[in-house]
Image 1 (cartoon, rainbow, N blue to C red):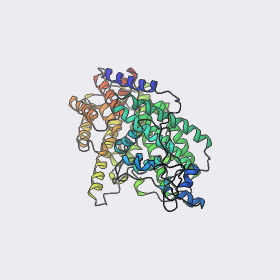
Image 2 (image 1 turned 120 degrees about the vertical axis):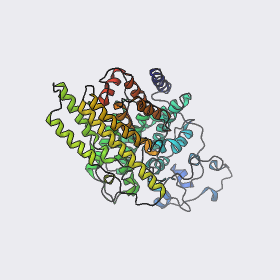
Image 3 (image 1 turned 90 degrees about the horizontal axis):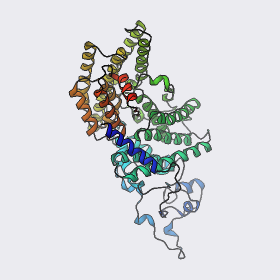
Image 4 (image 1 turned 60 degrees about the vertical axis):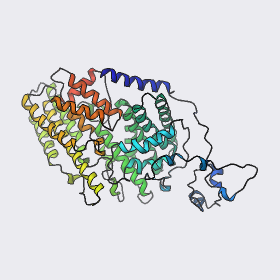
Length: 513
């Protein structure tokens, strides 16, 4: 197991070493498409090819002419696009097409690599589908419905998409070195481009700022999928938090921006808070990292599209928001034990009972609005999200039960109570294995796995994480860390705090999403 993890780290290091930190230009010899209007080609602008007058020409009140109507015998050339379909043709027809309302800044994807089209196809067919998201209908996955069209219109967003797809694909195909090398090139391009864009971005240009924040959000996801330490992730999270806080403090003029941009803003708030909350696992982390700013989750002025309510969280947003309280409670108990308090104090028990009541009183009505849509697919997804939220509810109960134990070994009575919760969790979890809801319960599985003492359940969790179709690097890291915990003979190696000590002992760190 340790050897496997070393090999994984070695592969990561090899890929990063071979890919220069600041590579030179790496253009391929692609011919420019001649499908756009003559005016856009002359101005070197992205043409949306709306006939008889494209959007840019209409906005500039310019004459819009097309190649079919213009002959130039001195420079005859065939339309490259007729013989070479664009990269968007490699994805299923059901995927959302680029929308002109998302064209925040024109530009074509450049600096492509030999694997770029493969990475784009993998994102559309695999990565975007498997990232945690609640798809109430097949067309409401925010990573496809929201960010994918934006990537077709914006260079930085396209390279961000290719980077997280490459981080996913290079892990699944570690024997193909070019995936890791070219992924690093896309990642470096995003970092360099984002720095330049930020320096030139006007604080009054809210739509452009939201586009840059979308790139920052994808960098957060990249760091998780690449297996980076939490410190690397925290840099992008801080940038995303500052941008969202600025917009939140300044306020959005709902009449001045499109519905799609408001939708992007809503999703970005959820991506930020979800990533922050998922990585509140170890009970000492809260005191060492930046405080969590949940104010960016406040409502956007104007009507919020119904599809954004649970786009990232599914059915358990209010449960996720209890994680910081549970983490603080655990840290409080550890501080008590360090001060010599053998038993929990009255102050601790008061907080414990308050949080326990909040967890127990949660119901699906707090986040889900009922399966009022009679579509069978909608009802199926709704039920799966209910079960996933109930799994999170069980994990939170176990977290605060472990918090009451603190840093010591559990007594037989305490262990028996926790194992009853474990069995209840296992029964619920089996009902949603390899559904889209599975991708959203990694925090729950990590907490429950750290509390399991039943060998059969340990084996079941290990098998689940190794054979699941959601093959991401963080999933493998969670599996390896739990197996290290279970193999540790120290009786205090129990619960999230025990997992933290085992990771420190083995010099391991990771982040999840």
